[in-house]
Image (cartoon, rainbow, N blue to C red; front, side, top):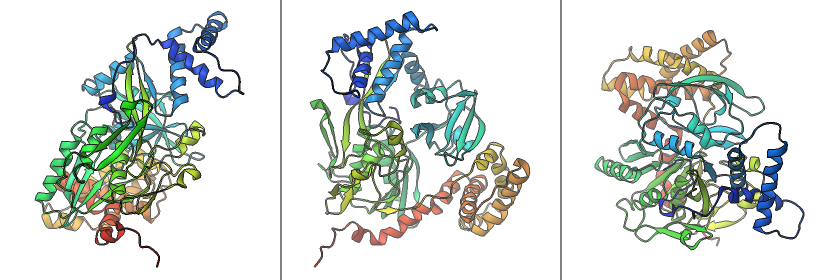
Length: 538
């Protein structure tokens, strides 16, 4: 499973016919280019192949530098796949072997998922407690160079593999953060180390009746982890639930269906896939009555919720089973399949689209617009005409398309973390301040309970000395408005909770002080009205 894929399906994986050659695939590039020229009489596949062969021959005879045919063909294949859609891609045999070694645990990485946004390698997800997380990287950071080598022009799959290496080795990253026209650049050295990755990271009570489950990704054991987490919450007397899919990059399609089955009756449509081949056209339905089909449910999403996370959220919304809270999702849901080539290389090829029960296509539009424009629509509605169509939930509530899934209740973006925050984290300023404060607090349950809401203490004991140290040590202004100060306070105070009272205290702190979770809690009393059929005018 590759978390970057838009709903890869293991049932679709098959080898392509042995007679298919790399040159024939590469020849398709000339077909794609010819389609953009003025209308002319169609040419046969053989003629197109001859055109491509002629180009190779001219390069062989006239180009001043020595270039191998394999390098040219690989570049042509990548061009063909890029001309099809933004998410089909080519993997060389060496890259495939390195990825396999990474999955076997023989190599380590830093814990980020990258996505190309506006032409830049952009951090989509930072895994909790990963080396990247500990070094202060945040979603939205843009990668400029890796070990002093520029990464412009490299695809995201290649980049993520280059971030992997021997356990304990280090990689130097140059990044930028902030507006594209006036970004701040910074460098950080990250040590590659193994870290625990679970599909479900947090299962706990928010208050006496509200359970909370954080689903990080749809990985191998996601279904079992979610089911066990829900059973645990039921044992803790949860009478309503917040399911957190924020920054969830997706994963296996089967997991999304099985998790939806926890909340829906048997034979409920979760989503459909449509493609050219008949076996791609599939309607995924629940096979049982969900054990938690009656619990009041709110789902959190944001601009980094993608793929299977979007499919799950949209299904629960279309069936009026859950209220969606947060921000519009990423807009990436294509069914893909792996095809192995005789050379040992392979391609991940889009074979279908994912459609919600109401008929919405989750994938943002990419036909008829430039690649850069497509990437700029991540987490946005995209082209205006795509939002014109109105779809209906089971209860008749209107929902719109436009790429991604729009929430029912919008939560604004929290304060932006500036570059100097990462520089300070890389230097250990955050841990030094937080750890020193933690040692001054009593290790009693009463002190722990008080710390969870001690906003004034967070500011006076943590934020003020932290900013003072940043300004003096880094020589920056480190300007912070009240919103940023509050976010810094939460981050530093969470560290204090962990150091003084343990990891479980940190989880409790984060859940109790998360703005989106608070908004969700406020919606529960009104949930029946919010999910009810619209009132008809008299």
